[in-house]
Image 1 (cartoon, rainbow, N blue to C red):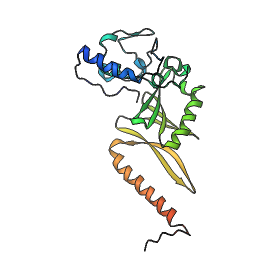
Image 2: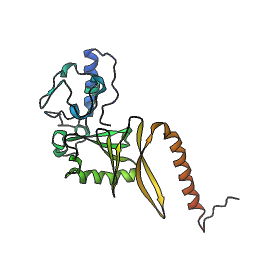
Image 3: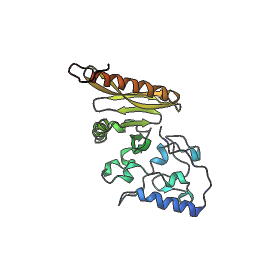
Image 4: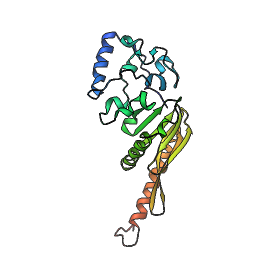
Length: 226
């Protein structure tokens, strides 16, 4: 799961790349810069270079920056971790210090922490774990997700517990769940085959409908099915 967006294999002129970069730079928070940090060049899978996750990009000068900076492809020019974009994240969240980078994914539906496989327990340390838990509380209210990825090993962070989903295959996806237990709903997460998503959506819709029917059929309800 630690990967950049799908590689855009179109050939761009240097002028086009500069224009793309200028537009992408608008995402950067004032005062932020990568500096000596290049953790995304290690943690992420970069299809453009056929680079697997957890290995340094062959073009990276570790601690110095990109060895092909002027001609680097679009995928590298347009990617910024959440620390680069969010001025509210403190210096402890700079990826070379945290040993992970944060990324907002799935059109804002997931906050993901992609962890350096060389430091797989980094997310459990403080202040990182407390921050992840705090964000999980907010995510639960918004019906979004906070997850940790160590390569394709996924852990979903919930307010009351963490769910270790193990390895998530490329033909699988992570979905949040909400199960009615007695008078309350229990949040959860599971991995499903991508091909099963439509079927699961129908199941979830039917479950929601049953819950709504239970609500309106309670004694004292003014709803009458006849």
